[in-house]
Image 1 (tube, rainbow, N blue to C red):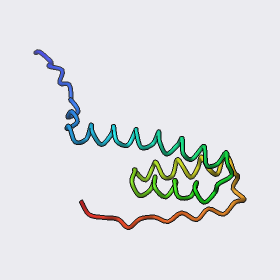
Image 2 (cartoon, one colour; image 1 turned 180 degrees about the vertical axis):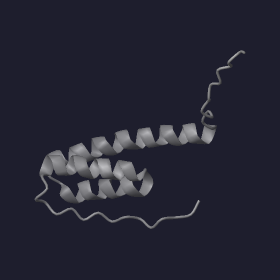
Image 3 (cartoon, rainbow, N blue to C red; image 1 turned 120 degrees about the horizontal axis):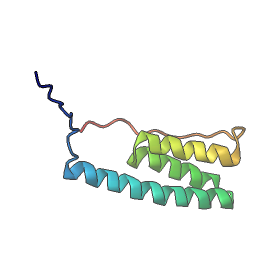
Length: 90
């Protein structure tokens, strides 16, 4: 009796998925840089706008990461008001 090992292959990403990953990586890099600059300058209004952009144009994880980064720098005592964009259908 011969046992055949089957390897389950994950489907490779489509060009659209690869492009989306590249877009989100580039967006994250730009927004993190902008957020760091805004926080360094004490411009909390700009920081909130950047965080909102992370939620609106990026993935929810990006907005959350930006918000956590801001809280780590400024502290949890600051009240952060973040406006979430409505969910759109694809």
